[in-house]
Length: 183
Image 1 (cartoon, rainbow, N blue to C red):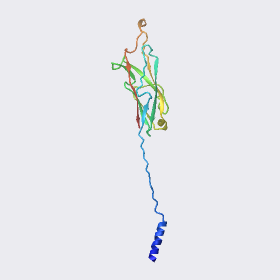
Image 2: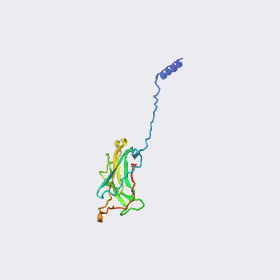
Image 3: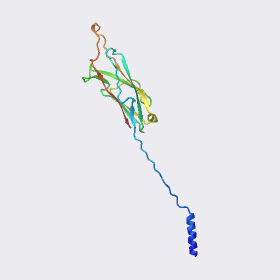
Image 4: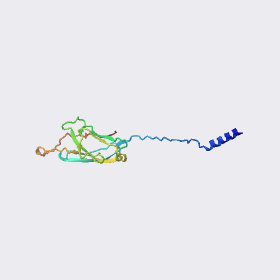
């Protein structure tokens, strides 16, 4: 009988002792892909037309506003922006390989804060490379204006006041590209 009482008492004590605490852990995880680029609301190709240059004196610039470009980047290390000209800063007459009488130099200006600005008009005779650090400004998006300028091609009047140009007649083209790569 005593044995039964001891077993009953031990069972009562065991029932009154709380069990060891149990825990449940949730390990949360998410991915955010890199989104880094330069954008314009009306698409990735922007026509810039200087129109007829043969009546504009060669010491006068014609400026063409090309709207604006917005940069957004969520890469913690920021991004590298490269502005390049396919013809190294000159428009070349279609059907020619450029050179004397077949090319018209131009310049570009890019405005904007957070390091976007070029500080005025610059020639694109080589790539313009800018490293821009990661910042909340680029998470929100930074916008800068873009403009191009070219000098007219009307030459000084010749003998008997004959008008002329400094280049051959034709269509002159180049392609300027702004590329953004996450660091």
